[in-house]
Amino acid sequence: MARLNGKVAVITGGARGMGAAHARRFVEEGASVVITDVLKDEGEALAAELGARARFLAHDVTDAVGWHQVVTLAEETFGPVAILVNNAGVGQVRPLLDMTETEYRRVVDINQLGVFLGMKAVIPSMRRLGGGSIVNVSSTSGLVGSPAGAAYSASKFGVRGLTKSVAVEFAAEGIRVNSVHPGVIVTPMTDEYGFTGDHPAIRATPMRRPAQPEEVTALVLYLASDESSFSTGAEFVVDGGQTAL
Image 1 (tube, rainbow, N blue to C red):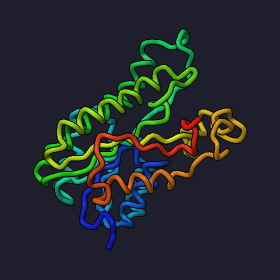
Image 2 (cartoon, one colour; image 1 turned 180 degrees about the vertical axis):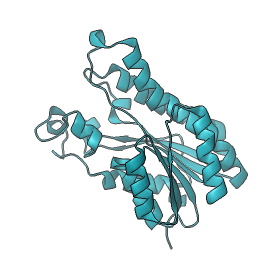
Image 3 (cartoon, rainbow, N blue to C red; image 1 turned 90 degrees about the horizontal axis):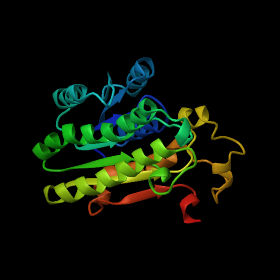
Image 4 (tube, rainbow, N blue to C red; image 1 turned 120 degrees about the vertical axis):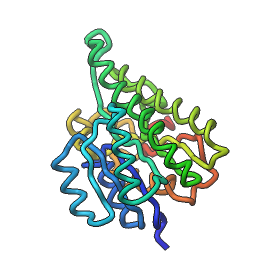
């Protein structure tokens, strides 16, 4: 049987990269998926590719009103939301003394506030269903510091803390909340910041390579499914051994 058969999922930042890989696999495993992103053309193309069990909605995760539109679309089209993957995020490499307040706030708003707003919007739907699974995509930068990464690390550590607090709050209601901490993954965002070839972060990875998005998807799928029914409030690392050093 498909591992997500009949479940309704919302995936943010789903137009490309890891989010698109999650969406494709979720549909293959029987889920109906609402994909959200600010990248309208790419998101619409992916939803068309995935067919009748996928919809796309252009959405900025920092927009609380927009979050309610996402949930309404999911419920009216497919039913109550059983899975939320807070995947949307932005990177930033900027020395602290060169960083402006506006730059700092942008990263924290998208990476951390967006997760808070998403959980707040979706949990009432999960309550109506009687439970659900939330997967918050953090980073290895949410476990250890990173050079010139103050805003990014702060936002990803924040996601880790949010995850644990909300997991404890809603555990008795059957709503599980876990965080995923990828290392270097081959995506357009990591390409943009030069995490390719002989980059120090790849040299510092014991497996000596970046991961493909599908390698993260395998973990996200497990956490979204009922197979992880006793896992909540935990962080799951997929980094080729980077944080084991």
